[in-house]
Length: 167
Image (tube, rainbow, N blue to C red; front, side, top):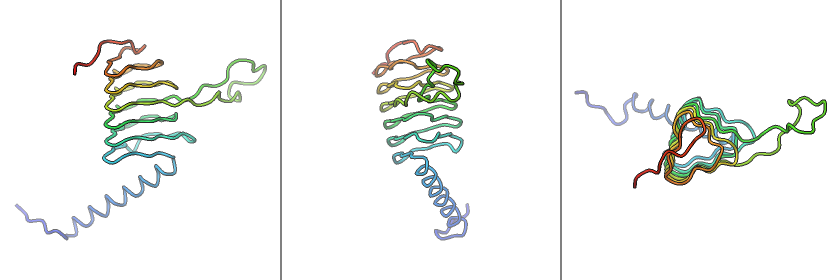
């Protein structure tokens, strides 16, 4: 087995690369108004829309192809699977006259809150103003339009309550 010397060129290159990537990620997240705690992992293919604040606690895992289109408060130890969408605002659709919906404007943004220890499965959509309780599980493909109670498991396209998690 090879002996690795503490200051070998390989080790130094590895540390420089990691530090550079960390600094770039930190700079990119700062520009997007995103704050995350220690031990968090955000996949590089996550899309943050402009004018939204995302604040996350420690040990967040945010998988690839997620769309963060809302003001989101995320607790500690939260798992968010691939292709999860967070939808923050709705277009005005009434009283427009001849104005196309494209130019109708947005009613306003409501925050989404995800409490500690929650898990959101693949391809779920979380709508504006929803709170996902502590330790709750949202099954893959669910569309969450109402608050999810703590330790609840919700699933199917309408995020119906399946059962409570066991302690």
